[in-house]
Image (cartoon, rainbow, N blue to C red):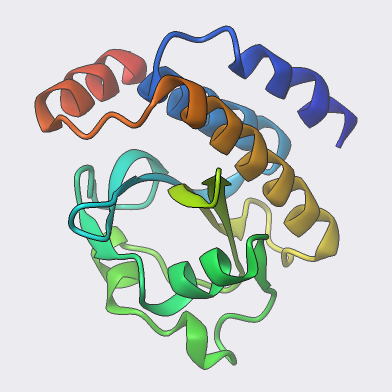
Length: 175
């Protein structure tokens, strides 16, 4: 957690929401390595989450959208903290066709909202810890912390939903 606290202060020196999303992916890949890491930004007009960054999975789903009032997203947003499903194969909340679209079979999932000023600004999801195992309270607390830091950053910088800009910066970040 100390590593996350130190690194997340660097988030506030970045220039926009997409750089912030890249930073979140990189810090999570280092501190909570997972088969799939997703960063979604919220489109309040459509009440949807837009996938702006993805690391892992077999299929690229950049710019995918999902309603903010369904499944794990709704539960995490309502609780205002990370939702951890340590055994996704036994938890009906984890059953979601979108995992197949990403090409992953979830065994353990952690989802944290980015909520600032009472508004949903984004969502972070991690699926299947690299090397096996399950997510637990420690990972949930860490993800909650990252979600809060991202929300604070997005509250200042704003959310970017322009598809061309998302694609262009995602391609640049992948290089």
